[in-house]
Length: 106
Image (tube, rainbow, N blue to C red; front, side):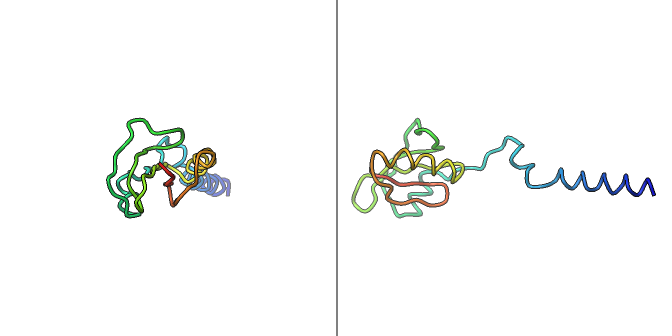
């Protein structure tokens, strides 16, 4: 009976170690979309990339969208996007956003 209990406990511990937390502790962050991918998705043109994205952004660039110059920023997570938007709203409106990206006035 003791061996059965030990085997069951080992199985529970092994299964717990294979849970969803393994992906978050591996040090690998989710990949952010590129500025070009977002531009294509929203129909923006004349895309150019910024060499140094702003705080929280993985990639950032400018494009022409609905006849105006816009800033497109992409993020590894929606939580980072939300933090970026909280700051960006102080400087202008958020024109569009979606999973891991935001578009604001340029």
